[in-house]
Length: 140
Image 1 (cartoon, helix red, strand yellow):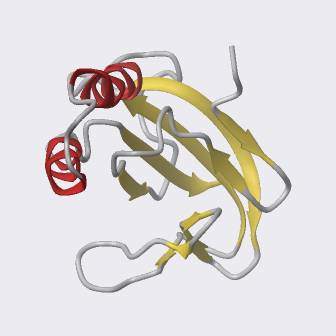
Image 2 (tube, helix red, strand yellow):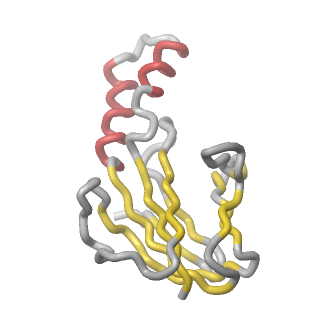
């Protein structure tokens, strides 16, 4: 199995299951460790993947696409998220829809080999957000 999430002292990397459909990333900042075990699947279908401590000297978290830079966060045009306090934080990453969205995206290409760019884009856009990640952050 390929590594899905890895961490260094100051960075967290998440490898998405596919690269043709936009993924959804939800970031929740907590004052203390959230309830729930890492491997538990919650009511919303989240499955635990990874948990680690990382340093956050600035007290701000930036989410980036490794090939195109900072990701714009909603609402608005945020590129950084303030965390509870500067210093070490614990991060838990959970996911849902990884395998299913990758399968569906592959199926678009397989079942529509003669589709034009606009048609294929529309078919893939319908899958946007199917692969989703929940990033939970709290102070150590």
